[in-house]
Length: 244
Image (tube, rainbow, N blue to C red; front, top):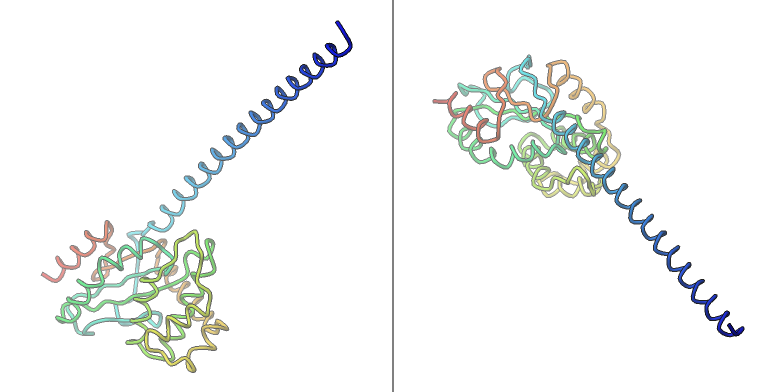
């Protein structure tokens, strides 16, 4: 074999070897990506299951003060209504968002008819996911204190209408302030409290009160002092049944 032939053969062999090495490297990368995707998927599944159980773990053994008697909530309806409803909630909790979306209109109608007194008691359950949870409750407390219950209820509704996903992105305090102003609060009255989070003690006290009442998850709904569990539709029906 001539020198040129040997050189070409060696070159072909080198290229073949390089191709084999490149293929092996690609296979290793695919294997690593596959394993990584499986691990990430498992983490997400386990995390979602944990959050679902934790967020919906509404103990039936809850001892709450009657609707309208808490320092840490906002009420809707006649204080002398025959049925009282209490909703413990976290502004980041997606199940609370589902309940709020389904129940707002029927609860408002029942309250307007003098049938129920509804009290919403937000607290900080999901800070381990994001500090949006306590920041939103802080903003609610500021609006309730500075602007009164009517504006606070509107702000409460807007927080759920603009509820972020548990995976983010999460609104900052300026965004919370903008929602408060949209709800009817005077910016000059609530700006410092929301931006500087001056009602964190209120948040801690509301959270402690919920825990001491036996609340373990959100939403936790009580109708005339009894915990009601189930889908939003089942909870709404339980309230209607209590009124009937």
